[in-house]
Each structure stands twice: as structure tokens, then as C-alpha cells.
Length: 161
Image (cartoon, rainbow, N blue to C red; front, side):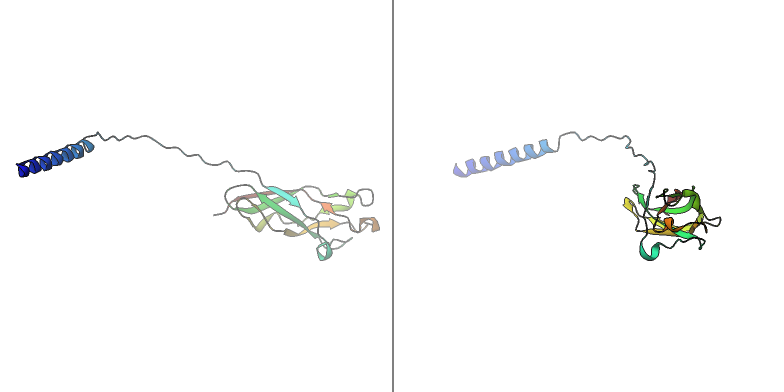
């Protein structure tokens, strides 16, 4: 009798486990389909920051060769940008009372293309310069010594390949 009870207990336990396991696999499975979306970013404008040179960088003098402009460029885009061109607007004196803006001009041969400036994604470039841009008139007097000149630059570029 004892053995019979033991066998019945084992049989009932095995049946219970089997039913429970069967129930776990009896749930329905499901699937579906649809679309995900993404969007292209919108290119953000670059910002040109003028930097006034000191020491040897302050190399413009009356009647001398065309001097450089110094600047940094901020790129807020999530990709690097290569500057491919620049256009120049009339420069101005930062101290018009001692050095009139009419004494400074953009050199006729100032570079507008062929630049090799790359600005990383979401960053500001190191100090950059473009030589041969600013001409100080030979008639500029001592009041122009140490004066900075602003030359508005419009840079163009594209995502670096």
C-alpha cells in the first residue's frame, strides 16, 4: 500500500508539472510591422570670431605688403566642415578718431578660394589666418599705430567628406 501511495504521489506530481509546463507554452505569440522614422539635420550657420594679433602678428604698416587677418570659426554642426571660400567686405578701423577707415582696404589679390581650413564638429577652430588681405594706405599717419582693423568675412564651406 505504501508503495502504491508513493507511485500515485509521483504520478500526480509529474502530471501537475506537465500541465504547468504545457500551460506556459500555450500562450499565443504575436508579431507586428510598421515604420520607424529619422530626420536629416538642418545645417547651422558658422560664426567667424575676429582675433586681434599682437607682436609679430601685428604686421600691417603704411604702404607695406597686404597683411593677414586672424580669426577663429565656430561650427555648431554635428559634422566637420571644410571652408572652401571667403568673400570680403570693406574693412573698418577700430579707432576712427586716430586712424580713419578710409586708410584701410582689401587688397585686390586677397584670397577668396583655395583655402584649407577644417573645423571639427561642435567646436571652435584654433587661431586661423589668411595672408595678403589688408592694405594700409601709404598716407596713414602715426595715429594708425597699434590700431586693429575689422574685415567682415563671409565664409562658405561644406561638410567634410
